[in-house]
Image (tube, rainbow, N blue to C red; front, side, top):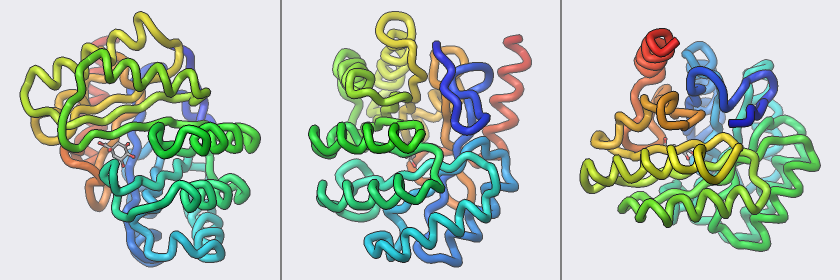
Length: 254
Ligand SMILES: O=C1C[C@@](O)(C(=O)O)C[C@@H](O)[C@@H]1O
């Protein structure tokens, strides 16, 4: 697997990196959560801006990006607007998604950008190119909060992300059975062995899928999300506990 750097953080080698989401609705909550995430074991902080009340106001968004960067120092920052159809808080039209992404890219304050694969083919490509021109890392993503697609469909989507030029390929799906969790792990393993050199990030959500958030070093998932103040998706463990488990696995595997 190739290593992708987000600032100095090496994604794709060693222990999976811990990403802690920040999901505040207003300035105060966002700063409080970011401060907690920074002190926790976060290797990377995700600002889930779909939770932010004023996200569609450009001046407020620009100001928040600057302040967040200031608060986080050189901690790597991932910007995500998760659309409602993929499990996020707010609906967003493709043109708004493009506009928000433009503001984020132009701000120069963000290190990595989450781009939803199925937002809109043309816009997705445009955003990926724009983020790359700014020297940002692109994490393409896809989420199914209802079910686990078949293994070949999951690998197809991840391959599509690779072809679209994303640097890191991510999929999160909901299991209905333990077999679904195995499907996700098999898709993860196959991606690394057969289809890509890029880092892959996968998770099976909910309590049944929890094991997939711990097993990245074995099956090939390079980032795992751990809860700070609150979880941004079902099945996330508190980041502190997650760190202990990942460290124990890493040390015993060495
Ligand atoms: O894509 C992901 C993964 C995630 O959905 C999870 O299941 O941990 C959490 C989201 O905040 C993040 O953007």
